[in-house]
Image 1 (tube, rainbow, N blue to C red):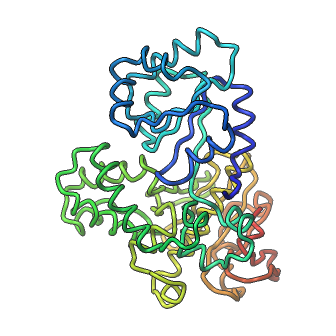
Image 2 (cartoon, rainbow, N blue to C red; image 1 turned 45 degrees about the vertical axis):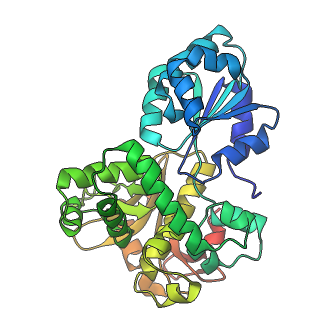
Length: 385
């Protein structure tokens, strides 16, 4: 099992908070991580209809059968359980690590947590494996392999698994279970087309009207379905960075598919060779870099620190703003970036003020970091940490 970066935080939280809520997309390793870290805890999964029904309709009896400390998997299936968890926690408030909860539907789960467990729960999000986590477990893994295979832990726990079959099964399961559970989608075929249309737009600014028109659905439906992708951890929106000293900056976010393995599957990129020949290679690479930057910021304990910058003519892929410390990054699918790849970085640095920019550079497939004359560097993603 690949060690996860969140393990230390989860152990600390179990000693200081009565409830831990671990969210994330299906198959990111939430249950495995809890079972690995807390082997002495009880365990129950609400994916089982009988358990979910009792947790919802007879929560007191359910908690008698499954007393703390206990791991409750896919807890979003029983929203009625949350107020009873609050009662159980408050009855023994000094006892920490009572309930470890997992959930794959972030929005509905967070609503129940905020209403019933506010101040009692530590909320942690678990995404697919970062490249650093993959390399820690399997040091010889090639960069391009990790991009195409993606970061789902099962694919590395058992390298013999065919990734194409895995993603076909994953998509079928996701469409049948999460999509039907989250909303009344009339046509799963239309939703799958919508998901593939989002994949074609990964690493691009989001235009909901164009997206809806291309799929043949109403703009309100596109908005609802996009929220569904966010809620289930399949897509992430990156907001633009604003400064009082900049003008005419776009306000629409950029859209990214959360995992590059899923993205490649949706784009029918089946191998490392196909990735290298694909016109979408640059967008896939930017999506991969975005995931690594998100992982870096989470490990540093930074929230809402990652953005992009764009005006009417220029764009910088990523702006990291952590307490006024600004970093600027471009993502380039090349192995040998040149000074021309830093033009927009230099422009934005001049716009927002050189004194505010502490670091920056071009994140590429270069094996080694090297400097440019203007103070920026090219960096491999392995040096992000």
